[in-house]
Length: 130
Image (cartoon, rainbow, N blue to C red; front, side, top):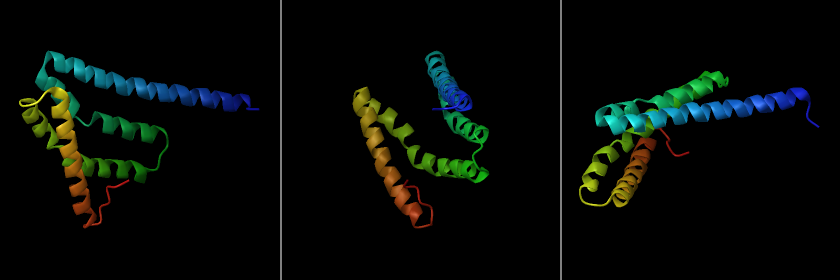
């Protein structure tokens, strides 16, 4: 049988998780709505590392060690680099193929690029594979 304090903690934890979902989802919806109005503004908002910043804020609020937050930032940098070509590949593919095929091809090539990149970085002591 759980104590009253344990039940309160459980409710607080659930409220916190729902709050994180709502704030994060609201930012994604905002970016897509802005993209409908202005392509450049929508792309600019999405290009900002808002999700990464939110994740670091959530980790800090939840009392995670500073090293874990620093690692999150460090690995995010290395994970972003090999995904950048997708933003050039997708529009090029979109000119030749329908949306879903263009997205699938760009994603598949990005996965290949990431795998090669991660293998190369491992030679320098940076392990990106979870």
